[in-house]
Image (tube, rainbow, N blue to C red; front, top):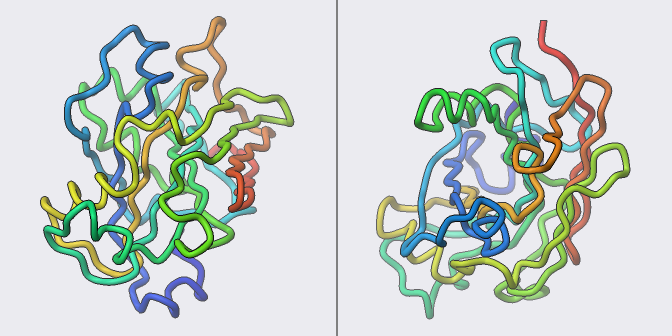
Length: 225
């Protein structure tokens, strides 16, 4: 699904870039027993993955293990190319909630992340856009993922390996960021694949990603036909 009409009208672009950052929470690295990366590990999701709060996450028939991932999303406010970390917030419109839905079995089977991250509906965002003026660099916000009311992820953005300023600077050194583009900043510990026993999304579930000061993106889960 595409961004809501109001979002497209605000930024004038119905299909933004969706740049994501892997292994960007200290607690998530620790639960995997790996060292945090020395520079941001980037990947992308396609715009067809975008999904509004309230719309269903569709489980693809090709995957047997789909995870939700709670993430803070940076929303770019104006064109940014090779900006400095000191100036980075001047290019940020604000923040929203995101869910980096992932077909985890396909992710590890493929040995790269394109397919596993880009199925239709695999990037719920919203519903609120909170400006930088209210949250600054968003460096210590409570972030939670719940499935059917049960908490799986419970952390703070102070656990980020690379914060908002450094991510905007780094990504803008790779590609020019345009208004409405999204940077998903990574997910904390507690995703289903790394739990014991493993937990996956099932048809009938309801997933919440809640971030302090921003709100909740909530989506039911359905099986694709």
